[in-house]
Image 1 (cartoon, helix red, strand yellow):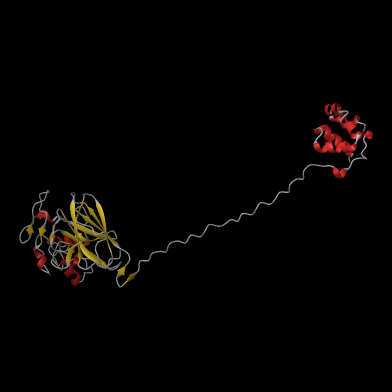
Image 2 (image 1 turned 90 degrees about the horizontal axis):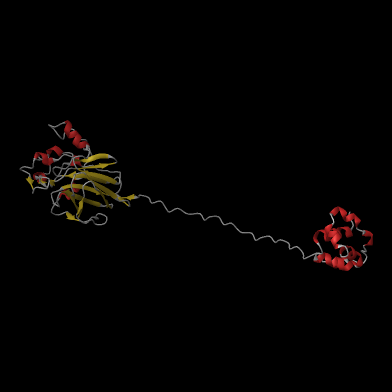
Length: 333
């Protein structure tokens, strides 16, 4: 191992007199001072390999008090950083799933009736509900439905009523009728019992189940039926139905082409579809709307238009009487 004097001198040669080395030099007396101070130029300017010329025997280490040497401030001991607790993201509890509970025919889900106007002109809409029953959501007032437009109306469980559709607001307009007591307990039909104004069909689950898309005005509204004033299209706005007082018919010649597809007399019950499972009914106004199953059956047997009509579940006569009692059970929403 290299002598201490050699190591100290080497440090002086490389770094000069540092505060720590200066203290060592002061304690050694003339020995190291002679080496470090009398020959600084030679030590600092001479290449390292020239250190062999130093007379190390002249260095006296006897007076050095090593326990007083200050080797510099103590190196601080690094402290361990505080541990940061990682908190997991809180568990988000999803909202409860709303169940469509049906109790005694009641339901917490509304029925939606969508109406599309394909008739080619603006039409009037007005709303009737059974006395004592719930109204349409939002209590809509008579309004206009623009050509090519679609609108939606929602009704709650317990609702029974109708939507009057025509060129003007008239009590004998064509009607969308129905009732709703929860999914699986509703019905829908198109009624021309009071009169005819525009052709309407309705579909459930993508299938047209009621209504007639024929433009009955093409054959003229004559006695025993009664035409109203003429509209902008040169056709009557309404043809009032003379068979409204004939519970079991038959329909007049004007309404006969739609018998069994739309109500043409009070007990024309094949036009009604009950036990509807869905909560969306889509209705279409105009001759471009798809024909119903009942209307297609009519075309297969012109002589006996109702012989081949499909066997659909009819509404009760009690409900039918409520819907068609024009003087007592109905009032505008």
